[in-house]
Length: 402
Image (cartoon, rainbow, N blue to C red; front, top):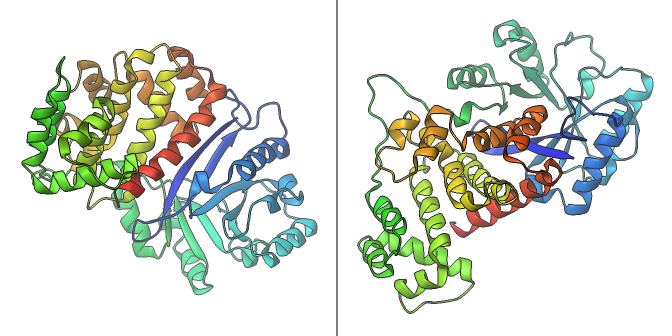
């Protein structure tokens, strides 16, 4: 079973919820050999057992349901304050469905119409819908202005899906949309002739440089950290939270307790946090999930001995967006391997399949996931476990930085 999530933002670029993408097996384009009911039930049952909070936190979970599953009683496994029921555009509308939706609404569930392209005035589920999703690739924004005005007058929440550029986001925002889904948030805003965001990587690079030596010096690293009171303060907070202790006698002692591998990871995260202050928190979260997930994938593949390198590569995969610079420029002066540079900048080389697998998993492109999993020789059946563990780990990390 595969499961991934795609973020849904509000107008302030805060997370409103996640759409959950899933399949019953790695090679399935839709539901594989299983029926839609059994495939969906498997995911809902798993989320119920493990706790859906692990996947979506305190946000909403948007899940696609077809006719058969809406009519089943499995939906009630998840509390209405968490679940948004997305009615697929292919669902046959009849009296039984209408009555079932009314029953679910009476229990507190919100109803969303997925990829809506029907007649707004005559489609029978519209009066029952709380959220209407428009796929702007199927229904361009300019073609639905009248429907948008009508929906807004009826207090519907409007969600624009497949938003891929800042321009599309701004246009949908001006039209009155409330929610936004797509990968526009993880693309750099590069404008010719403008000054890119500036960020000093000197101290972080000095620490990472020392860590890359055959015999790193804790004294040298301590001296670098102590040269910046803000860095020293934040590092001590992070280390203290990680170890669960109240105090350390010195920064050097704290670093020794942490260990070199964890120190390298945390220095990298501190650096990303510094440059993500004016960016959506989801970018930082995405970097952390990618980092941990790729480490898990590497550890269970033929690249086990390169897992730290692969983890750092995926942690830095959003650096171009955070700095609003081309990736090549963003990586300038950073001590990374040629394989990492080629994978992030040129999308080629020995480590490129890891980037492809992680991105394919995020987008729910399960055939591509299967393809790249074969390249790096990992059993696709264990990816689900690693992905959920990565989400949980990223939440703990973000908590420690607050």
